Image (cartoon, rainbow, N blue to C red):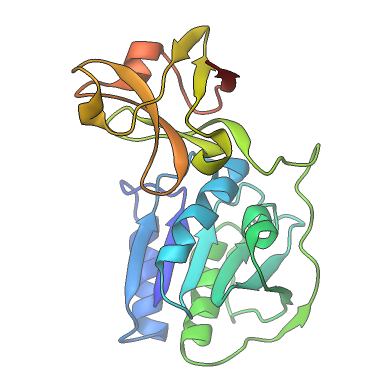
Length: 243
């Protein structure tokens, strides 16, 4: 099984091109489009979202992960094996949280190159073919290495900001709900948001935060758009305060 996780969106031909390569190089292997709306160029958002969804997939699943604003530059292409899953993509911080939360982890720099490699589309020309080789039981030419640390200050274990706003207007944060607890109010943009267990626990139109199905703190509204109600966007900070 090959799983795609990118910031490519669905309006352009890029995902279709990757599917074409996988169909040619790994015929019969199931390909799942997990997420193609990671905030554009936002490596950190992708890094905190990826380990939340990966555990749902069976052992041996191969994730092709492309949030790669530095494509064609100095960043290295890598393979990461973590808790029985393979992750293929750029060494730019995207796999930082997968590695940090894994029980067992092994990283390798990819030395293999295809006969033709564009400077700007490694998702199609390098990462997809490498995933196809892994799906066929081959380990491409590679060597052990350590992941490069993300640029800037060290990233926290839980990120107190909005990572993604879905089409309902719900704001998914980088804070794990088990860390937040249920006795905390959430502050965002000068507004206070109280917790609830599910949507139906509050009146229609009410904004609240809850532990979403993937274990993250999410700001939502019952039958309404929380992002419009509160005016938040990707990157906005949150803060927890004891009630």
